[in-house]
Length: 89
Image (tube, rainbow, N blue to C red):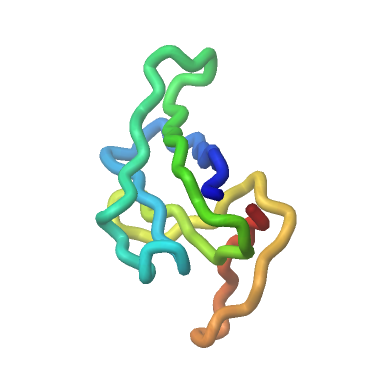
């Protein structure tokens, strides 16, 4: 059963924010986040996704460039020697 999973990123100067990860084949355009104009924190982007239980690696794509999730507590080294954020659903 899929679980409701929230992703948020504070990126006040961003024109676009997407989520890429193992859950979508690292597609940098398929999972856009939306600017939350109701948030008390200007520049907050967020979106709810429904994911199957499991462990996933991901990165935020801000204006075409990869960014870490500053709120994540776990990161794994990827095949390129960089780090990916990890979420357990």
